[in-house]
Image (cartoon, rainbow, N blue to C red; front, side):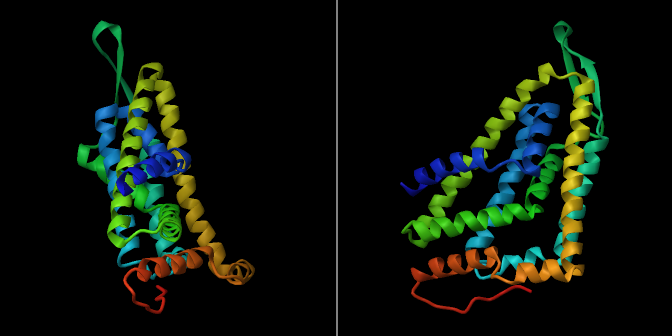
Length: 254
């Protein structure tokens, strides 16, 4: 029952909250490489989701993610990593090859191998701090609203992650169908737009963190109230530990 409920929630969440850097990368790889190769990128994204959810349910359940997200080194690593992937995407060029029956096929300059596509998907998703906040929110909500044991909670999220991967595969398939409608010029323009989006996202992460660290007004304003992520993690900590019958002080990562 929990597995089926997780699948239902996964389908809903996947179509409502999946428009970040990984989504753009998913669409771009599907159009450029076709469905089969784009699935490697989708699997990489899914593996990063599995890692994040597992960490949130285990070793990081008592961590204050607000402190982590406001760490300048974390922001720098994530921002530079996403910007680097964006630069590589921006520089890619579509090469037209004539297929059978006069149809056009495209290949990309600097085409990655399957394992590289998987790695790109993994890094692009796991380096996005909003993915961590997203999964923290989902886990906290489920733990607070659903009366589940620890085992049932794992089964639920297994179904949710399975459905998320399935929806990503479907997105790959739908996006790959656009291949026949795109010219090399349009593909190159799409490359540049996707690259600029990723670069802009990475730069925004770094700049916003610099402003937070150097502008006392911004820092004081955020510190007036308990950060939302802290409240979420405190709630998650309470609900995860209640079925074990133990109580522990919240540990914050600083």
